[in-house]
Image 1 (cartoon, rainbow, N blue to C red):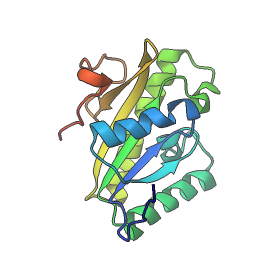
Image 2 (tube, helix red, strand yellow):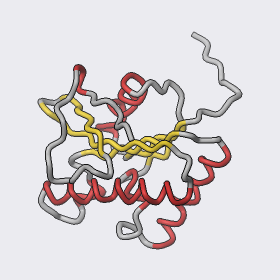
Image 3 (tube, rainbow, N blue to C red):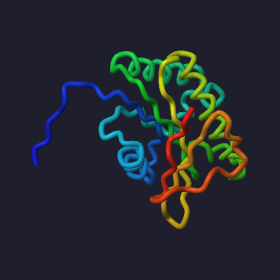
Length: 166
């Protein structure tokens, strides 16, 4: 089957971890649950953690922000999807207990949301935390009102939660 390349940029940017164990689940979630068949990607170890100065050195942090801003401005990005996942090696290097690692990841998602909104106030930004339950992916919506230590609403059919409505 011959595939063609569209001339128009995708207007959605997904930022998530490069861990290959979770890549296809992220792609499937974005396409099937969120309805984005075409989207730009910023895929690096730790994903949205690159938006947080406390995680990286200053030059890495600024480099990530520049590249993301380039995509937003040059491609006319209107929607950003942030995904963090459990058992992330980028965060596990801190040797925190799993619940503290998860808390840190969710706090970093919040920081990424705030950073993106400061630089690009017209973006629609969504954040999700990917858990694995019985070897199946479960995406939980994260909002600025979601405490990282409380359980979120139960999943809908297919293990996907609907995007947060702000």
